[in-house]
Image 1 (tube, rainbow, N blue to C red):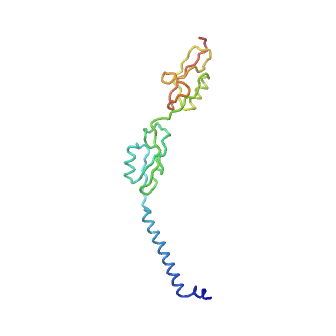
Image 2: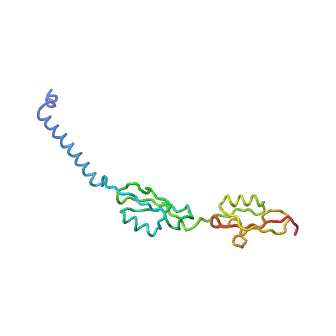
Image 3: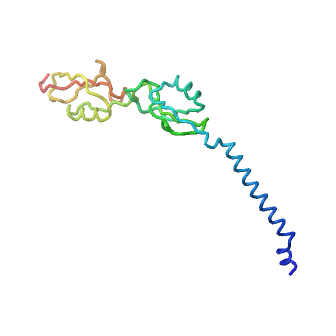
Length: 184
């Protein structure tokens, strides 16, 4: 019974009100401190970085109180110079806080190298489809005396014979030497 009488006593209620006031004051002070520490509503716009060279990128990003990190550079675009920004996150025009990290995708120095498929001893039609599907383009087509009409006898790059499996830059021109259907 003494315990219940203590719960409704004036001293306990006074301490309960003081504790609630201190708790509310503590929460309010923490929210104000968080606004100050986290730079609440102190935003800036992300500049458009597309097409900017990696050399100039560092100056521009530092001037805007931002940071950057390269996340990818495997997608070559011939419309932009090598080592320039293709894309970035967050996008241009978005609002971010200062010292925010911008993730950029760079244009590599050229197309990646890929392996030349084995198209020797197959027809011209199949060889062209195979080479184009991998990313190569067809260069000059020449004929030699061979009984296999339009059959690939040899593949060349820049006039030199190459073996299947050779690594060449994507979009490289591959010349085909075909049979003309006549005996040697």
